[in-house]
Amino acid sequence: MKKSHKLTAAAAAVTLLASTAAQAGPYTDDLSKCLVRSTSEQQKAVLVEWVFAIAALHPSVKPLSSVSDAKRTDLNKSVADLFTTLLTASCRQETQDAVKYEGAAAIQTSFALLGQVAMTDLFSNPDVAQGLGAFSQYLDKSKFDSVFQTAPAAAPVPNPGH
Image (cartoon, rainbow, N blue to C red):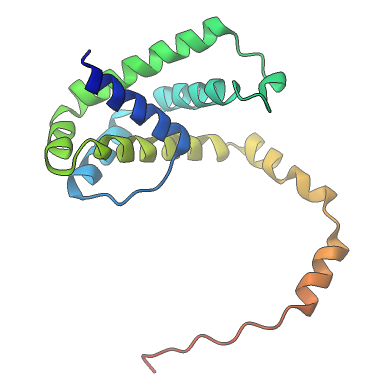
């Protein structure tokens, strides 16, 4: 693999982790749609596992995870295979057009969307959703009530059409 292609793949992977929004043109939109359409639910699950395994390397959360180096290597290989298949086969024409007309950043932006879709699937799981809300039972409701009771009422938004 050429050095520039390795850098593009690495940048796409980093973008998948970061999931930052970027301005997309029509070719990037087409590539994004193709990536999402061409990725199975099982492959999205592998992306989620891979993101988790990579995030688990951070010193703040490393003690909470038991992802082995062997599992991380397997996930890296699976994600590399997925990226290769998507960009060179499933979405080959969309990849070529996006890079030709909108630059290599189109790949990063498209994978960011795919990452967001995969993470949405993760967080829509009922067990995960319940876990996300579990902290609210420990909030001090009286402190929040005092903030919202003393907050000024929002001014009405003018409607220029009337």
